[in-house]
Image 1 (cartoon, rainbow, N blue to C red):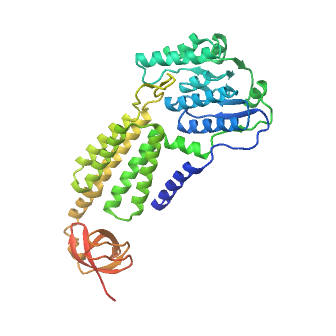
Image 2 (image 1 turned 135 degrees about the vertical axis):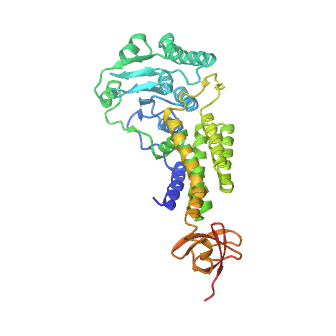
Image 3 (image 1 turned 45 degrees about the horizontal axis):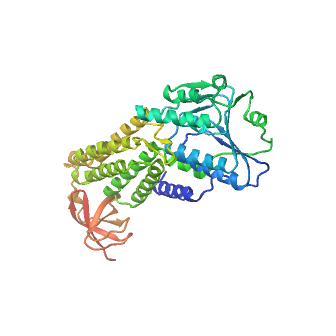
Length: 428
């Protein structure tokens, strides 16, 4: 894919995030609004569910049914969703969670979401629990245990058994959960549609799912993806400093902007972002130093910043609900960082050292001074004292000039400075 295409795609993605609709707003056919979430509890899921709850409330749909399958999530998004559920219930609505279909889970953040529901049903072959946060210090575990117990007891479910899903990181199968009383009931159904019928949902009720906007928010708020975008943007701009085209720089800038949007959704700390920018600055410095040391140092600082993205401090909301991360760096994260670090270091060395070595190996057969006097055509505009590009002797070269020259101008080589040719316009 061409760099211009990548840049355009990134810009369109950012535009879509800001404008695309989340859920349908068709006129309700009943008092039931049904939504399906088969994803992590993240900013995208928050965007989807809070918008869906708002739509249901504005349509006077008094029953909101969530078909849930989630195995991970972050505390901030969970807290915002639970708050939206509370507002919907306070307005007279009934929030119902159905964990399904067969093989689905409501674990980590999903377990809290389920227990925040007026009614919780589990289909056959499903699991709930394992709700201990990543930052599982004594205070955090106690706070989240109390939070889970409060959610369960609010609706008459077994608070002690629910608390064990946090303090002991327990999980319950559908039959176990029904037996200990952390759910309303088990639904014996072979399909989601059948399960919905059994709890009173009309057969013609549509099931809403995440829209393009929510999906894009989920993608960008993934720290791994935002990290790739950020580092790819840095690398693209650095390459463009050696071979100016401005297209790569534009695409790189767009990638960095999208990465920052994603970090914002994720709730990245200011310290983490500052370290990442310092790391990027050191990587750019490699353009001047050419020894690889600056690039290596920049990558190390950058990686420290990325790891700090996951270090969300334990806090509580004004209502007293704890907020912390339920996800942390995975082996995939570390592997990704290692690959990207290697790519940046090797790439920075290649951009100068390998090119220089190639010149030394061919020095006896090819001297850049032989380019003096040869003519070619500019393939980009060249500002006075700045660098551009030109096709000379059937090859693309980095060139500079003492005066502004337009793309397409025929030029002649006057001097050679390192790997950059100094040119002047040729009249006629």
